[in-house]
Amino acid sequence: LRPVGIVGTGSCLPERILTNAELEQMVDTSDEWIRSRTGIRERRIASHDTAASDLAVPAAAKALAMAGLPAEAVDLIIVATVTPDTLFPATACLVQERLGARGAAAFDLSAGCSGFIYALAVASQFIAAGVYQTALVIGVEILSKIINWQDRNTCVLFGDGAGAVVLQAVPEGEGVLGLHLGADGNGGSLLSIPAGGSRLPASPSTVQNRLHTIHMNGPEVFKFAVRVMGEASLKALEQAGLRKEEVDFLIPHQANIRIIEAATKRLGLPPEKVYVNLDRYGNMSSASIPVALDEAYREGRLKRGDKVVLVAFGAGLTWGATVLSW
Ligand code: ACO
Image 1: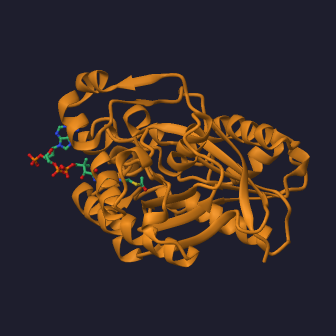
Image 2: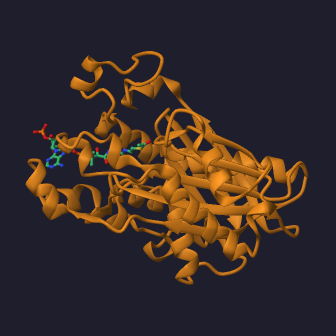
Image 3: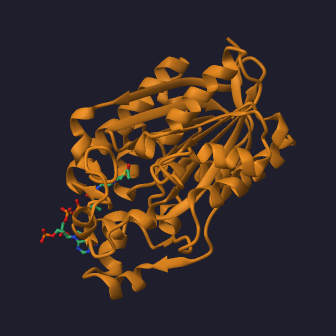
């Protein structure tokens, strides 16, 4: 198997900022509650006519530009999302057409907030096996369109955005060194959109009962996340043959600052080795990690050879971690 690494990153965020002060006008909440319980100050919200592919395409174009590759070079596109433009065709196919990546295989992947880590793992296998040379992995969400804006338990948490990476074969010792994926379907009901699928198709009553929006048991998801973020990171490190003391940088899923702090503590890392942008963007589900990775790189926070852990948890329930030599 060939070593596989990230050779380009890109991101795209909507311009509109929604502050905690604005949320105070919409539901019974306060800036103080949101900041102290979650760490979020503001989030980006897409305009009403923006769909997932509209953010995914510019993010992917930036990643390809960084890699110095034309769209025609792409063999495979995986879009991780829970907010596709439509149930079908897949958003990946829309991205393929708009980028001009003619002939590339394209499909969407659903693993909640762990979607980007899952997609990275799947795409890496094709490159490692020599089936494909270049893969584009995108995490994109327009969560603002599936939020119940009257539910203070959820509406303060989420935001919109897209991040993308380009994968290719890299020299021995570089790129993906270890990965770990997992799921526990028993916790599926803790975090879901109940209607709109074949179980509860759209009907006037599902709309009236807001069953097309995010339903979440926050405290249970919180406990699960605290446990699994550390465990998944340690398993991926074990597979990479690295000790936690050797980690240079942690890019965790950006859901809640208290979950991030718990994972950081478990890995024994100082705060300066952990990337946090949820204060500015909230939880962007599968877009959180690729956006954070792109920003961390462009800000000069990642040095060549750094051992970087990416770790996420999400609906499913799912979890995943990857260890990279940057
Ligand atoms: N403003 C003010 N009060 C609020 C708000 C709000 N926005 N939201 C909830 N509250 C209230 C609750 O109603 C509750 O009041 P009560 O005690 O009178 O019933 C009180 O605050 C405490 O609520 P808790 O849920 O116990 O608060 P907690 O400290 O657990 O924080 C939170 C809630 C932030 C949701 C936390 O549980 C959390 O972050 N959970 C994980 C969520 C998560 O990461 N989801 C990931 C989604 S991933 C994906 O795949 C989409």
